[in-house]
Image 1 (tube, rainbow, N blue to C red):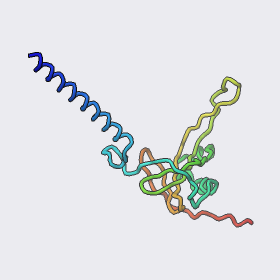
Image 2 (image 1 turned 90 degrees about the horizontal axis):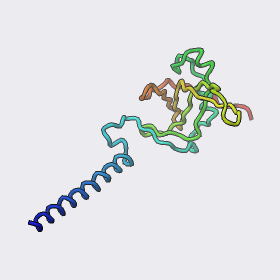
Image 3 (image 1 turned 90 degrees about the vertical axis):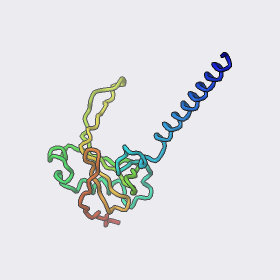
Image 4 (image 1 turned 180 degrees about the horizontal axis):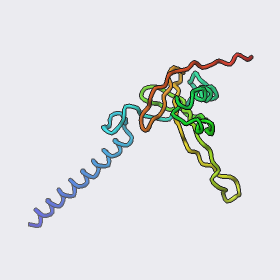
Amino acid sequence: MKKALLIFLSLVLTVTVLASCSAKQNKTEDMSGDPKNTSAASSWEETVLTTDSAMITEGEAINLIKSYSANELSLTKEEKKQCQFMCYKSGVKIKDDYYINVNANIVKESGKNEKGEPVYTFDTKGEYYIRYDGKQILKKVKNDYVEMKLKEIKEDTTE
């Protein structure tokens, strides 16, 4: 009887250990694997990248987005007047292409830190993505991206 109990407990312990290891392995794969292979992933996935290979500079990206009307940017006229347009130093991979990210933010002073320096908050009113080759612009709407009508980038003619 003792032998049978010992064998049964050994089997239970072995199965528990194997099941525990298997569950940890699957959890790691879900978190670090390709998110496009998961059922919860949308068709537009983002990852952070460098903008070194972009054909458009940060300044050009900001000026391009600012050239759109408030309506085209899904902002009110007052929001557009108050917004500061900021370009991220890192790029974003959306679906299969690389983009520069420009945000329209209303910046407000929210108080002072312990040194008496002002602390600011950023109220993001719009997120825009310009493909590295400058041939596509996306506007983030909720959790999806909508393609915007492309305007030509005006080249600087000063030497």
